[in-house]
Length: 511
Image 1 (cartoon, rainbow, N blue to C red):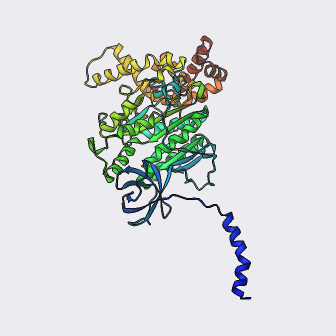
Image 2 (tube, rainbow, N blue to C red):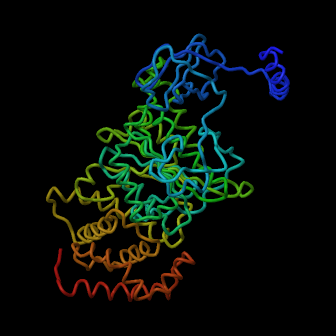
Image 3 (cartoon, one colour):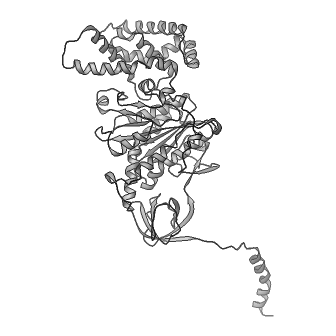
């Protein structure tokens, strides 16, 4: 017998069996071709069925998002550097939208805008991957903002209070301490159950490292997630960073927990969106921003909310940061964000350069929600504080011209200077509620008016540990009840008087 026929007879049944076992089905693939690529965007032809925001995969593995869909071509935003992508490269449509990992495994990690670790830690394994762009909770799914979110900064907690589920804008010129306020707020959650998510959009790597190390040193790093779209990342990766961070924070909100989202900052985010839009020929509008730049931020910040009890009662608080030029609050992006959020904390360069830190301008700052969440004991002392401080600032300007003033005006100015002194705090030292209450109590009772101004800072620095040693039970009662009884007032007054005596005795200096 022919050896060839013999071999075929031997292997033919095996081949038939393999063919019968094969799962044969028709598959449909959408394959397009890169027409042009550069500056983080690509124009693709041959993908007529592509939908907006669909995830595309290039032949070198780089991912992209369909940013603009036309009749003959698709404008794609690259999520990677795509150095190997050139004209003629093949692109496949996935039919999916971009999803990122969410869950407990992300806590204590630094990741990029797609959820890939950047901290040299182990791979992240989660049970869920959620879309980065999700609809905001409906009105009926929301509840009233009733719980305070303590920042640890007296100027904010007393006069611009925040609530869990609120959206408060931090706005000011470059290098005036906007990020410092956000970082201090994260550090202050060390003593609370709030999960913190920090989104760095277009920031320098050195700046991001400083924030991460500050939280690692002073805060509860294990309860934080850092989502990084640094300045060196592709524009597309920077653009999706706040959406990725919001999705990761929403996971904890939907679990009935409280989350805090910091976006640093939305001005750079708008600039990146303008860059991508102009490159892909979207019609420009005011200041060359596309017409939907307002919707871009509105749909993001509307996701921050306090959920109703039927949905678990969780909350997501958003503290977006925006940068102004020469203090211009009426610019396009700042006015958009002010109208979207529930108030703003304005950081003024003049105060910053004078040494007042945090340099919060109380007159131009407002919280439209948080006042309803303020603890009764804090509200009691803060009611007149804002008015007294405003009166002092006006009188201080008047007296700079050398005008003669009466004794009452002198006392008002002296009292106002002590208000300003206790509103100043060093970085990374947020104060607890009882510490702030004790400061405001001493101020309200006029005890600091007799203390030389240069010693107020020393008094403020020592007060916390002094009270822990002298009246710890009083602090516990105040913390638990949120009120100040007559007995607690006496205990506080005695401890404060003793501290004032000790501080002022050695120097006896006057201001």
